[in-house]
Amino acid sequence: MQPVLNVEDIKRVEVELTRVGVSVSELMHRAGYAAAQEVLELEGAKSVAVLCGMGNNGGDGWVAAEALLARGLKVQVVCPMDPDQISGDLARQVAQAAVKAGVPVTVGPSRDELDEVLDEADVVLDCMLGTGFHGEVRAPFDIWIECVNASGCRVVSVDVPSGLSAQTGQAGSACVVADLTVTMLALKPGLLADDGRDVCGAIVVAPLAEQTERLCVEADPVAWRTDLADYRDVMVETSASVDKFTRGSVLVVGGSSRFPGAPIMAARAAARMGAGYVTLAVPQAIAAVCQTHLLEIPVVGLPCDVEGVLTADAAERVAKMARSASSVLVGPGMRVSGGTVAVVSALLRSEAPLVIDADGLNCLSRLTEGRLFDFPEFTRRDAPLILTPHRGELGRLSGRSEVPPTSLSEQLECARQIVWSDGGSEIVVVSKGSATGCVSVDQAVLPKPGPAALATAGSGDVLSGMMASYLAQVGGQSENLPLMAALVCEIHGYAGTVAAERLGSRGVMACDLIDSIGLATDAIEERAALAGLEDASEGQQA
Ligand SMILES: NC(=O)C1=CN([C@@H]2O[C@H](COP(=O)(O)OP(=O)(O)OC[C@H]3O[C@@H](n4cnc5c(N)ncnc54)[C@H](O)[C@@H]3O)[C@@H](O)[C@H]2O)[C@@H](O)CC1
Ligand SMILES: [K+]
Image 1: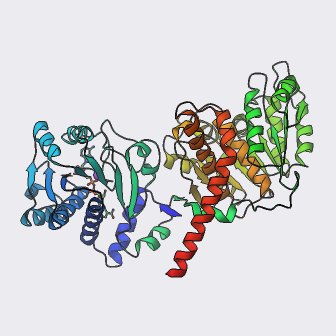
Image 2: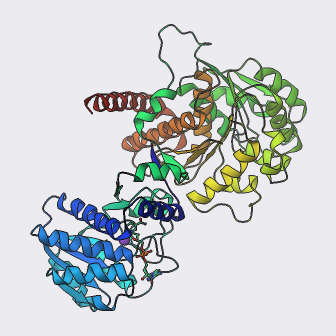
């Protein structure tokens, strides 16, 4: 797994590195060389325009420019002011050194002059704005960014694409769209979510020093980005000696007359994910219609009101059924009412491994007055509890219904507040967004995010069905619950990719995801096993 650090923690690592003898100047030189190296590895890179800002991101650019010139490439630095006028000592010194070494400079070009420089170049090295960027992009960089994006050059961004907040993942009115981002020391959350997903291109981490890995871990990473090999330890063990019950039984509870489709999709997803036995419990009013869609899955009708919403009488029945299930999912399509709140409450008190999604989460926020972290007694239990909120639901659970989290780092913050107030190792918040974080008291794990095809109605119901299914198949418990949840998210994402290949990137509906789950599971598990073997053999060679 790779550590992901908040920008302020990256700065702390930088300070710690200086304490162990790696000066900031040395770091800047190594950063510049790392960026230059990535340019040299691009096929056919001969002429490079290096666009430098006035801070240390620009400093990295001057070092890279000098290194690229020394390797025989044609280099042209573009800078808003004369190098001697740069206010930061370090950036000015490396700029002056580069000029002395013969690096040609264009100072403060007009738009046409900049376009001419870019016409001559086949690669742009973007060193305008790094982690020091905040607010809206000001002149001249707003115009420079437009020119870069229109140039047709391949773009390598240093540390972060200029115009993107490395912390929030939000892009300003102008933002470089890079083919490759060479980021220094460690991943930052903004590179992995929201606009960051669109503008970073491939991401390469340049650690810059041998102590970096240790210092990043000591800086308490905000999250860990998974590698496929990590999943080996949490995968379902395959065995031919199984029957439908040993493969895990899942109880799905949800639905209402208004939303009969959600629990159907969740139940089908649970079955496609490999559970041997799935039961669906829905309001009596929709039991027949659900059953017509589910040949293999028995449907149980529960007491409901005239609107086809579960009543409190259903709670006891559900709790009883939960006793014989390896895991339970509650929530999809169930609506929020006194009855559904009673059902969720009964399941929380049960001993069943539990996944709560959608309106199940909204019931939970009703139960806890929108401040789940103030009522840890509701979530504290011996069996696993996985909550799968999107940003809106997470906001409603975290006292932020008016201003739900808008970035991955805010998602992680809200999720942490919930799991830390609970304090137990059995709770995981799977906080969904353009990037998903699986957060427990011990760690936050970031699976590789899936394609945009996943952003379709019902996709969450499919994920929660898959989650309950996997939980059932590992016997209702896992040594590493957040990592197991991340694996399921990764399979869900890959199912989106498989479905998009078949139906086009905009044509995928949630039901199509369900049909792709089986192949996606096989593919991800095989790749994880293979990646693990490769890691092991590399370890032996080392
Ligand atoms: N943290 C580290 O350990 C290292 C950082 N390095 C580099 O240093 C960078 C951070 O350097 P700085 O803190 O100097 O910051 P930056 O170079 O990212 O940005 C600061 C400059 O940008 C300008 N600026 C900020 N917001 C702006 C806006 N909205 N519109 C226009 N201009 C704006 C500021 O006036 C200042 O001149 C990193 O991104 C990385 O590239 C590397 O040199 C080596 C190691
Ligand atoms: K940059």
